[in-house]
Length: 277
Length: 356
Ligand SMILES: Nc1ncnc2c1ncn2[C@@H]1O[C@H](COP(=O)(O)OP(=O)(O)O)[C@@H](O)[C@H]1O
Ligand SMILES: [Mg+2]
Image (cartoon, rainbow over the protein chains, first blue to last red):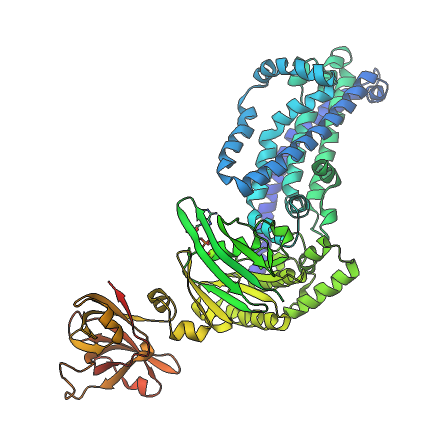
């Protein structure tokens, strides 16, 4: 009796689920398919002309390279700063947690255009000291990514008995660095992956700051080239989106991997390097 | 085998004095329990020994070496916490190996040793399991194995059993004691459970408000409490209201001869601390009544069978109708029925008075 009843309920659920899934897939995929259609339009029939042009447009390649580097640097900067700081606040000065949260959430409430006005003067100095590489945007992006990264890491730290774990490790002979790398980071993996994903997605899609501060990155190039060659710009936009999906998927896969016995390989190499350097 | 000395330890949190001139000297290989109500400073004492908290005053000396200023990672102290503290990302064996790995023990040796230790705590077959796959009792066993793996000079246990079921608790405390004896490791054990402390310790230190009230072998702490606090905290105690009359305490009209009464002023109001096993009940036959008798007429309220004794609650018939607990040996103790009139006699071994 129960055996026959259960699957029927399941089918009802599944149908609803499939419907919702299909609707959202349509909503997300339709524009992407339109982009694909547009970027493969030739003078006669389909053509991969625009896609091939990516490889032969140096400005576009540069934009891609810059944005990728920015994404990696920003992620490293944000995780490297936030993980030890948030952990320290949780462990030693929990009464400052609210204040830290407030500061980290500020960038959400300030419109990008206002940030630019405030940050422009500062960037005169950054340019003076570090040169005018677009990679210096890493600092600004680090600030923009704070709200998302903080939330993820803060949640991750709150979910474990950080103090007891840290003290257990300390009594077993661990230095603070070891506590951070072998106890906190491995148990924060899911949080770190989501912080990293959000940061990367944010940087890869960033246009306003770069454009207003006169730096070239992927989105700026897409915009510039789009005015000249719409097909190429749409192809790159689509490619960058697919790329971002792949990055998020890979990171998500790392995050969901089952924990292993040894703690050493629990630390993503990038994170370990960042934190020790 | 290590000798642990704590002398003159003081620690305040804001206005709260968590520890106050706290002294404790633990001999090599000895098992000492700190017993006291919640908030009396037991954990603080332990955390100062481990180095997680710095003392405002006083010193911690391990085998003649002053470690007061040493960080926790340099003290070689094994600690088992009240909260579950296994690293969630490591298997049971991984947890046990953690300290050895930090000390650069070779992988093969590390694995062998972890296996031995897991065997010692009865979890030989569970090395590959992760903390979330283990029960609370098993997790605390692994935590014990992990603490022992670094061959610590001192073992500290902060209410490691308090989150466990009664049965598991009793089993595990016995095992902790067995392992401690086998290894001869100097151990400081914290609990608020007097039975636990009395059952497994070489000596018990009873604490109150950051101070050591009494430190002695369990039997002495129980039979000869040094202070009224100890008398009332350890074991079950009747605190009978009375007043001083010469060398007697008058409890509800009956005069109980007590030498110590002389040191109180005449008429002073006191509480007389009496263990249930010091209260003797006899059937009342109506003849014993006399003003100078130490016996008090009372009525039985309840009688519960506790195995070796029956705990009888009686209400004194005169005065304020105080309740008194009496432990009468089985099987005679079972004979007292609710409503029955009895004579209460105090057969005091070690009378103790508290002024009220
Ligand atoms: N980190 C702390 N901050 C403020 N007060 C504390 C802290 N640790 C302990 N205390 C206070 O010190 C006293 C002793 O605490 P504790 O040593 O934990 O007692 P116990 O372990 O005997 O229950 C308590 O009043 C407690 O509130
Ligand atoms: Mg405590």
